[in-house]
Image (tube, rainbow, N blue to C red; front, top):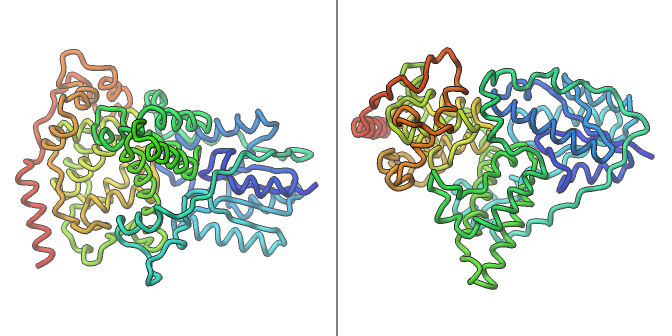
Length: 475
């Protein structure tokens, strides 16, 4: 019987896992997760959430008579040593697409092949490989709507069933997950944020099922209302691969087909909008693959000299602490600190306020999200910030300046979202609002008795200053 190693990364699931399926055909399977430099460089919240996912994935393997081997160090050295220990002839993994991971994986594949090992990387993180979708001229897409039209009718293969996995004759040594201390930078916030996580493949599949059964029909109408449970919540699970994009796509597609056959069940708008959001995620990876500078520099040409403030300031600190004096902005930032996620409508308002009203460099916001979001995704985070900041993929980039007051009237008309997250404005604050003070660093010196601040930036003046800076850049 042969032995194959599966290098587990951000694919913490057993179903629809092409690398596991391919490895199972060889005989025994040894899954391994490697804590390398890229893992160590993750922000506090995503690294901690990854640790939760690894613990749950390890339990799932144990119920099937397998183990998740944990090793630290350079992946090439780790995989080479492990292959010798277990007598493996093959190594499989699911592809990553960010530049750092691509460089690492290319070197690892070349090194292992030079040692005589069979090495295969597999699709599995996306619906479509970024190089597979092209315009008629053979170029990559730079605008979302044409990209959506190009892929909406493409075949997305059915999700793969969980394979039968055989253990090796003897298991190699493994490091202990707790010794890695992946959550050490969360400090006291971990206990608060943990209450809002839905961890593991089984939980992710249940979450998808409930969404399709109960909410997908109203997804288009409800998803922008901050206080409503109108979204799927699956971003957390997609980020670490506890569910595949392909599984989500087919669930949404089945709902759309039912709506077409029997409109009395639901309209088609909700399921189609859900599919569009999955493709928006694809588009982020499409752009990151073809234009990797989207992660670190303005995506559009001519924006290098835009006068964003790039230094640490009191205004930036106030924004990070959810104390700008603008209720919807502060509510969004506090939701993130308590739950590890933020409603998408609030994310846009929060990002617009920082990059336009405050004229703070969007990369500082991008970095803050990368440290605080448990659903952090390298491509989506970068594209989202650039889209809002005006230097990203958008046909009318800079003139979209979200007015937080208007946005609250439209998408939190009763004030329920703001009430849920801001304690200082209430006599009897909700537990969610008070939890913010339990999660934040003590060094901030904040509690519910500290008066809520006045606006640090006048909205009208901030908008005018942003537009003037844009016109000056163009001139």
